[in-house]
Image (tube, one colour):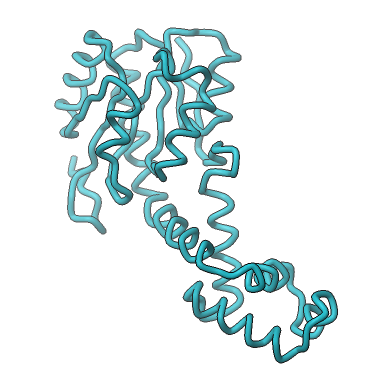
Length: 229
């Protein structure tokens, strides 16, 4: 099957953060059988050192590493580096509580080690399909995030009220500014956000809130599944 991401013109890569050699051998075998390139890293910082926003594929990350105190800690690291790939959590811990924490933190799937070849193959295919479906929206979200960072505090005040549906007159009264001042701020924020209409602006904000990490680093991503042996 051709897994090439059509809008990027390149095939997705499976990234593995796990120093365990038996696990790596299993990954090499399954990635090769599915036609996915595989890149392995011993620790999260090794993966993050080579990460660039826009890379395609999925990330399998071990939760049994010394650097990972809990699943949320891993996802905070990924969020800080703007890693947008779907993440499959790996762990030898079979407790349901641990798996639930991983899913709440942002994993699209949880695999207990050692997993079977069939489980791993299915997880790889599902994660790559997840990325193919949501990739364009997620990359747009990061563009929106950068645009939001360029807004002034005054423009953010107007943005918050535009999203709530307030009119220029209502915003002027609430912020104790003239209607003309509100119109100017609104025009500037629309230009900075590259939004042609209010509906387009609202869609950007809602999409970013749905798919990007929250301030605590946790990711409210959809399509999570639980796979316990």
